[in-house]
Length: 74
Image (cartoon, rainbow, N blue to C red; front, side):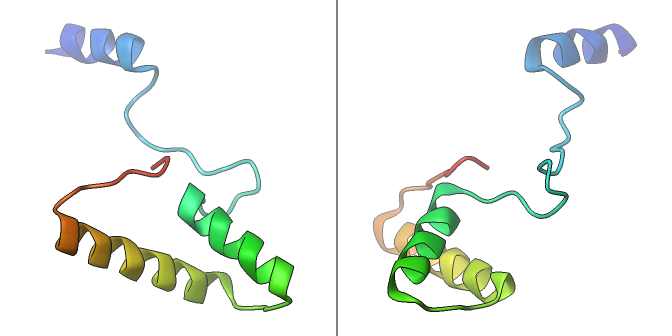
């Protein structure tokens, strides 16, 4: 079993755990970055937690309506 784990880590490029970004915060996907860019352009400041809730809810609604599961860099 240990040999399979070793092989999987070599093929997969790691232990399967996601590492935090270099900034030490959360990892941001393309939807989060797009929302932040729009807010910056229009001068809106919202906390990161609120942005995360907005994008997560939007993603859930999209997946519920279309049946498509989307992955934006997660």
